[in-house]
Length: 143
Image (cartoon, rainbow, N blue to C red; front, side, top):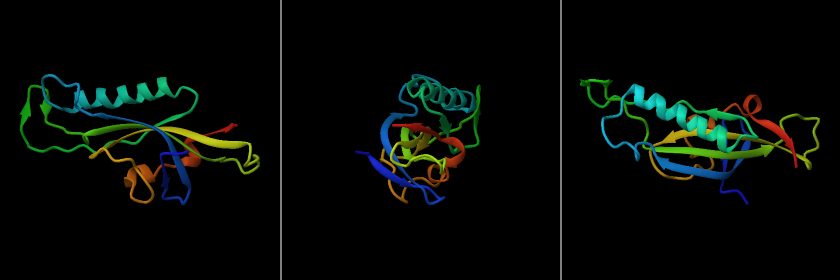
């Protein structure tokens, strides 16, 4: 049973079957969030998803970056990502129309960032997450 259903902008319904959430800056002991740190966090989460979900393609939804004040420290200006990092495994019907819909499905692992620790659902999910081009990114598989 899926955790939730997300309705993509294309009209396709996808099922969230596994979700990992973590604090974006929970492991940051010193310093401040800046572009260099954030780039490492984003690429690290993508690598984690590729390792954990090695059998399916991985897509990174580029996170929004905010610059709360104009001040710059030794590593450049403060740059803040949304506070929750998510890695999810999604499934849907097969992409290729010639495949048997009873025997085939499609899957995609997705990395995204969001401001609150809510499970994305329906049409209320983040617009960037709902904008995924499933047919181009996901992969069909046989049950």
